[in-house]
Image 1 (cartoon, rainbow, N blue to C red):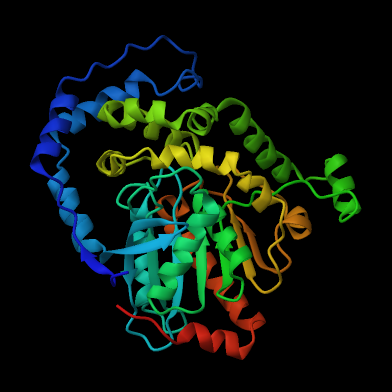
Image 2 (cartoon, rainbow, N blue to C red; image 1 turned 120 degrees about the vertical axis):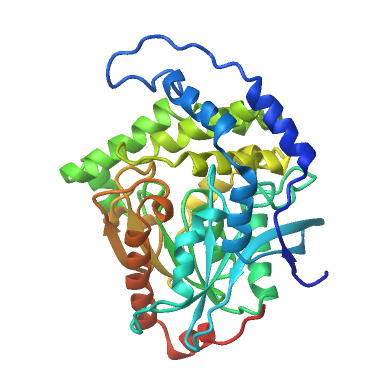
Length: 412
């Protein structure tokens, strides 16, 4: 395999013209009248789509966004082999110049992408000398946005985890830390299970786990059965239940017929926009205002991929029974776990529940009072502060040899 190569976004003019033609000739479907507070019950409202499409027609400038991405992110691609497939993996890599910097891999999910790491890049050179600096690595999931897509079935979370681990080794990071939410949390949990001597610390903002087993954790199971929750815990659990009962239709489609829905999404910029915009609305604070440039750029990055990989991951994970396997396996004490829970996210477990089923070594746990599914975008200061507290706990609880291993190594 060849070494990593620098990468710059440069979308063809022909593709941009195709997008422009589709947007300019788009038909916006009329909505029905909804009671107050129920505007999103049937899907994304026309009142939300119309101004977004008008903005796309008259104000959105992809070349400006493309330039911003190229100037903001140091991007690379590298060919990595896994299970007979060669993945051209796109990734961001910002190496700190500070001698005590340690490597952190940031793993995004759906419908996010690598640009979610933007605010965390400040951690490569923090102004406060007491703040831990990082080498930041942020790959794009195979089949998502700028990474190539697997050509065969069966390339699920476990194989993606191996690709991420191989990336870190390729960059010279024998040991490293990780941070992830959504699919990113599952991928890094898989890394933690497969390579616990390398991923020695993991911070997640998607604390999902299975109920405890009767023989292993009878007391915890009893507490769950008796609904031994505070009012806030009950509220978050009810939100999770609400989402999976009423808002998970997209995942049912993607986990059963990902190719079919991908024809519609990839051949219709407006369809992809509606698909993404609806989900980010329902997993964030009601008061959070999504910048139209951000939403349209996320949409463009998925259109550029030309791949159904972002939908196929749902089917692969189910058919390989990977999620139940991940959620039903405790991460060993070798890996120091940090958890941040945000109230408008769609996954939740209490700390005592997670201690029984998620991980042996939870070193930090914080339940925030604001924020949702995309904390690195919605409330980046809260997330970076939490990561810093977690890293202090990792350092405190790790052996000196483990910590010294984090500080050494790295290329590019």
